[in-house]
Image (cartoon, rainbow, N blue to C red; front, top):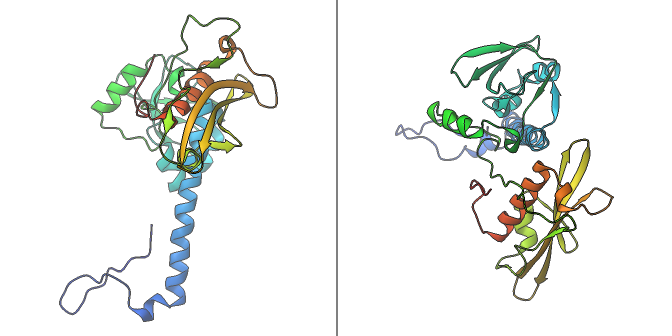
Length: 267
């Protein structure tokens, strides 16, 4: 939302800018500030729900009922895949009633009413019906504001060695532009010579980190190894990394290296 001119010139053509008298009017300034606040609020809603999806956090349906009337929350929540009491019955969220009931469209195309006390907006790696859900979403022309169904996912290989703690697939890859700026744009943290992302999974916070060596003279950065650790704790063996933390760590490293687009899937 933004304060825009919709008036007409004497010729009947729309005004490109507000007249100076209106631009300086206190009411117009208040509208402009309101528009800026609404934009910030919408961005905060998206960020909060994205965190719920990445971590597959259980969310009380009473909370969903309270925020649903807010257009910022509703726009971000609508059409996300949600799970109620039965994890094998995913559906696309269409409405939350004031009593906390969820109206969802299931894979049979039926609109059903769910009445769980807790709902989950799952990370796509945790959706066994992901392929069917993607195809059904395409058929219904569903567009999600949060990257859920078409989020790139990476499955953990089955041939990992018990003692391995690092992934070296990205070592030596040169990133031609400022890596720190690129990481920040993609939503990752930069700390020293590491780019990190944090994932809450199975009751603990895990941090994926990829090292880099940046040449500040020519703005190039060379990527190093990728590893995972419990936040403020030990480095994890690769075999102990959970599926969501693995997928998000590989997604981060891949996005920084430019090896694949963010919507591609690698098993």
